[in-house]
Image (cartoon, rainbow, N blue to C red; front, side, top):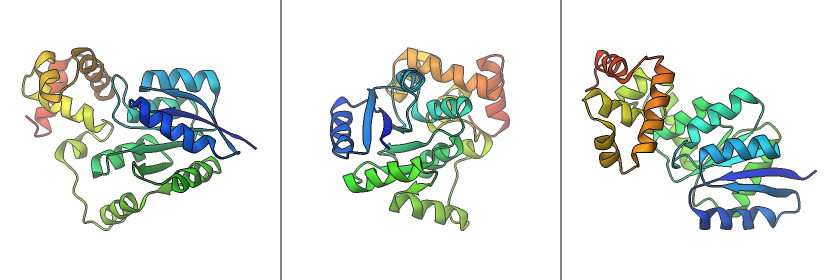
Length: 214
């Protein structure tokens, strides 16, 4: 059986190299390679892959939110995160979204190939540093930021946006501080309002302040 894989990463050369590693194996076929979360949703709808490999930080729709939406539509879809982030917030945001595996970029080809096969069979895979963080967290030694504790459904980037909304920053100021476009900020604000079920940014800011932010 050949495993059909869709890749999502905003660095074209990394996608190219990863696809080359994967397709060296006779049992894996990369059917689509895309650069952001919105393209990932479209590619999955079009190609119905067996496994999704996604980065977390991408322009527009980020990997955590894309994972949430993919699994809301197809809870059995195996999602493997492959990212540079190994901090608690990114790790646990991805796990809460339903990712079945989490590897840090720098993992060698054999580890990635093994992870793809494992998640396709229903298993879970966590790289060494990520596994240690999970063990540490559940041993009671991990630290969770106040924003993550108060708003666990938000991705790390959405929490950053909410914190700035809470102190009264407008979109252009948030874009400058977080080095992103205003369009991307608007997308994040929209996601925050939806997840908090807040009618507008003022209501979201009030909820954030009630939780001790800002």
